[in-house]
Length: 384
Image 1: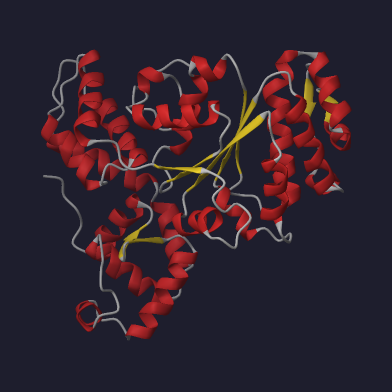
Image 2 (image 1 turned 90 degrees about the vertical axis):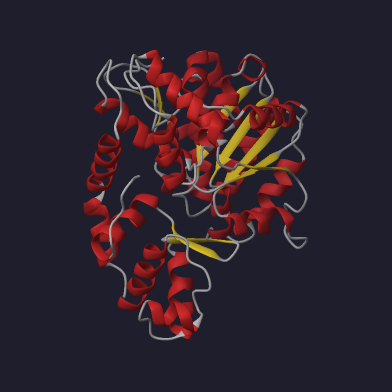
């Protein structure tokens, strides 16, 4: 376990001590997969899907009885890249089991044998293959599933940002994967995704191969009181004081969105001295610090947008949560061109994942980006 100097983890999973709540979701996920079923987790990005999966993988009923694999396919564009990710994850996870595993792995997944090399410095086995060297991706995938089905323990495979397969350049990948997965007896799957409409189409559209093939777990914000108690306790454990009112101010600013809340309290924890009380001024300072650290990225993102898209983005940022965005009142208030131009801009901003839409409420996807926009083009933001 890595050494922890700040209890508010912003990257990866450490242990249950630094993991807030999700008791109900953890029980549901563990119950589903240990009973041989597959599950889809849908939530906005950075709400805690990865942490939940890794937390469940660490629980005794999972860790002692299953081989667990986790891949994030957000940056993949085709089956070759998917095969590379999955093959490498299996190899890297199980290679500590020794040479017997390695020999068995490549005896079954022979098409990936060129990936097996020894590090020239340490002599340790490595998985090193160019994606272009995977000549028969479908055949390699078939061999990977064969390996999973013959593994010494049952396997759990978690695939994050699963909706990305809908964008693969290969044809009919959903059908290919579904054909393999429906015949698995030794392997259960966790499909996690952040684009709700794409995930719902994959699993709940009767015309799609994965139709009604999973249980569904919706991941929402952690309860405010539970999160407040978690934060207050970690401050108290290290002789630092923070009021519930300040915690709730931050929670509500980000609607309980886990990654943003964790980031701010990570910063606040570092700014609050031992035996001192966190103040409103420190909260404002922590917000400004975090947002300033991303400013070059935000400026770059903004510079790539056409003028009409920028205008609509500014308007949504100023509203924070914008509704009726094609109405004459909204268009007049923000000096936009027309209803049709707003519709076009919104469609493009959604495709670029710069804004998000939930129940016809529009918001800047990156909350820090949204706050930065209000400082540059609006009235700014203040806590309290």
